[in-house]
Length: 242
Image (cartoon, rainbow, N blue to C red; front, side, top):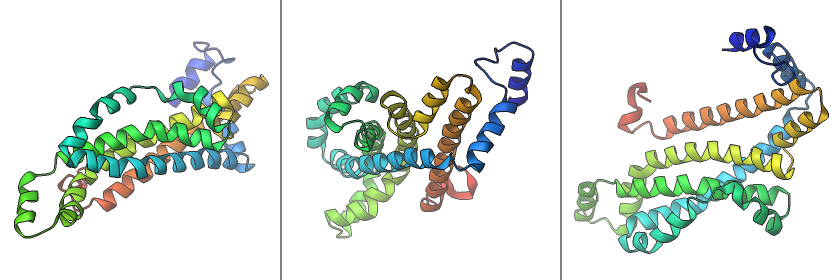
C-alpha cells in the first residue's frame, strides 16, 4: 500500500501539495524521533489517555457490576444511561472548556466521558452473562455474596471488560488528539495544527499523523498482550485462538 501511495503521488493522481509521498513523510518522522522533538508531545497525549481511561475504568467497573447484578438498579438507571450514552463527547468541548479551562483537566474529562460507556456497558453485559448454575452452586457451597462476586462474577466478566477497555482505548486516543487540535491542549494534535498552519510543512504534518497512528497501534498491542496474559485461563485464549 505504501508503494501504491508513492506511485500515485509521483504520477500525479494525488496532488503533492496535499499528499506528500511516503518517501518524504518517513524521513520527516525519523527526523522528529532522532531530534527528540517527537517524545514530549507523544508523552503529553499519552498522559491524557492514561488518566482519562483510568478515571473511566475506576468509575465504570464498580457501577457496571452493581447495575448488572441488581435488576432494580438496571431498571432505575436504564433511561439515564440511554439518554447520556448517545451524546458525542466532542459536543461537550465548549462546556468542558468553560468548566475546566483549556488544559489537561479538560482533556482528561473528555477522554473519561468517551471511554466510560464501552467499559460500563461491557461490564454490565459480562455480569449478565455469568452462568447462573455456577453462581447457584457457589451459594450452595456456602459462599457469601462477596465471595460469589470475587470468585465467580468478576472472573466471568473479565473478557467482556477487556473488550470494553480495548474499545475505550481507541476512543480515548481519538478524543485526546481531537481536544488537542480543537482547543490547543499540548500534545500530538497541536503539532499537527502547527505544521498545517506553517505552510509548506505537509510532510511534517503527516509525520505527526503517523505518530498518532503508531501510538494507537502500540497501545492496542500492549492491551492485547496484557489481555492474553491475564486471561490465559479462559477457553477463548488457550492455544493462541485469539
